[in-house]
Length: 166
Image (cartoon, rainbow, N blue to C red; front, side, top):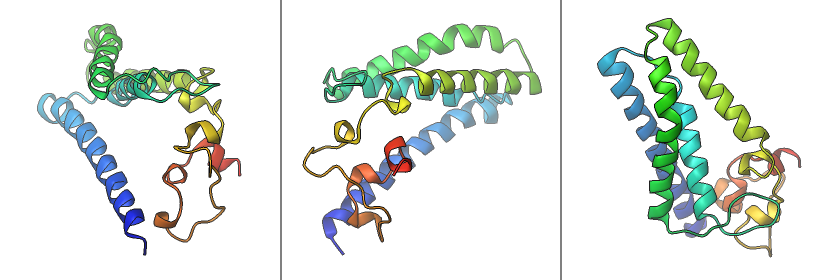
């Protein structure tokens, strides 16, 4: 096995574990301590994630973003964007209790997901070509069926529109 591929896979899994741990911690604070089930946390997390991706990504034609700002600026901007979206929604929805809060926040998370997915130029809208998402334009094709994750390029690991269209 390729040690570099295994190291890339370990880093990828550590990042995913950290992301899901943060989401679980946020949900535990709201649901565990207050008893209020808030599914909107996924939508607010998406707003922050896409804000950070847009501000810190490399420039590419055909998609939004490419400002190449430092990572710290991206994190601060993502927190501010998520808070700016969550504040007015929270002021309205926190008056609901029990199942009504869950239903309202699931609807809000779904609205945010659909807006991000259908917005032209968004990273999730499949507007970018595989070459613009790949770290190097020299080899941007993903193998049809890779025997192991370690033998395929990192941009082929996550299922995207380009990999599902193959």
